[in-house]
Length: 168
Image 1 (cartoon, rainbow, N blue to C red):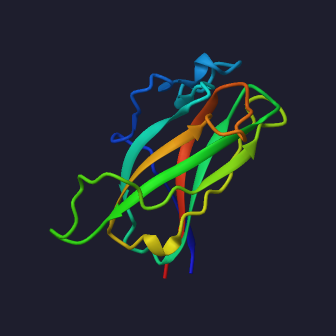
Image 2 (cartoon, rainbow, N blue to C red):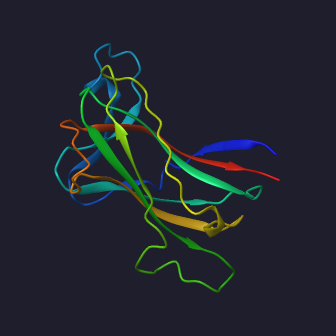
């Protein structure tokens, strides 16, 4: 049995309509301006802001699902609350892709980096049995600034969103 990680961010990932989450070059926030890659900025707005996306559960999936945001911030104190709202759609002509509601909303509270721009990777633990190989997963990944636990007085910068899982 091996553990795999795949990125959940891609061309179908779009920010919500709040205007408080967007994609920008990392050179805007970085000091050294060397690595001109794109990051998602989750504004410290005191509200729930995020990105929508979808992925297919890999065919070799057998369990132990975890969602791992790879993020940083310029602030070095406070906590951020990340949530992974999702629902799964399986079968062939059995389940609608156009549904309301979520299957589960697991979250994690993570502390700010001890120095600006340090890489952080907390783990969100969805129910592994909710996923099956080949299913479509629709998700809304958010910073929930509306909860008391989110005390980070800065924007969260998301570099990647990983699905970790084990195979047969």
